[in-house]
Amino acid sequence: MAAPMPTTNMTVAEILDRWPGTVSVFQELKTACVGCTMAQFDTLVDVARIYELDLSDIMAALNQSVNDGEREAGRFEAGDSGI
View: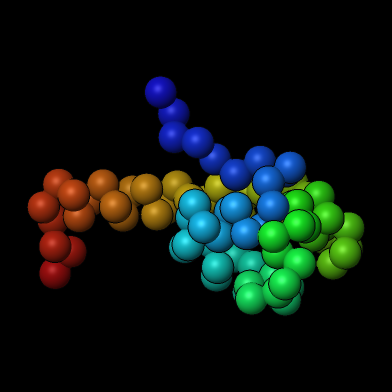
């Protein structure tokens, strides 16, 4: 079974809670989502509208971040220190 991925109807807070590594995505997109009080209410659809960003670009960046994080976690769980 594939790992769950962010969806467009998830709030920013849900995404950051589930995948902390996605903080960098919101920062790279030049949003104020990280630490914003509206993060618990705003979905990715809202973020795209508010910041005039393409929703598919946001999703692609988040999915890449989640996939990279999963690969990194799996590598360390397998005992590879990466050093």
